[in-house]
Image 1 (cartoon, rainbow, N blue to C red):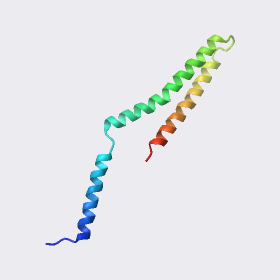
Image 2: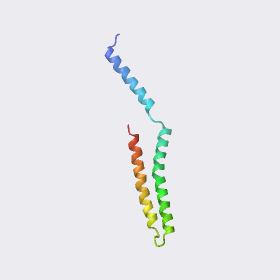
Image 3: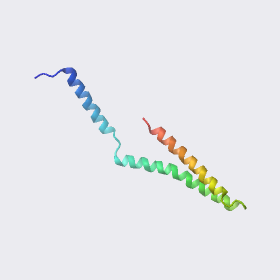
Image 4: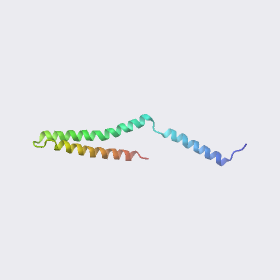
Length: 92
């Protein structure tokens, strides 16, 4: 029984593609680290800006929560920008 060389080459190419896709697939640890990094790049600017706003509130009389609220909104914006840039960078 002889096989068509074109068919054999097509099957061989498909098998190689499947093997390469299996090697390139990210593992559980890699995905977990990526999600952890996304969380950190979102939360750290939020915490830093909120702390800075609270510090400003303590230093200036009459600004009870304006600095803290401003810090929260600035931190949210910066965190969202960081997450966007990181996810855009990772796309193939």
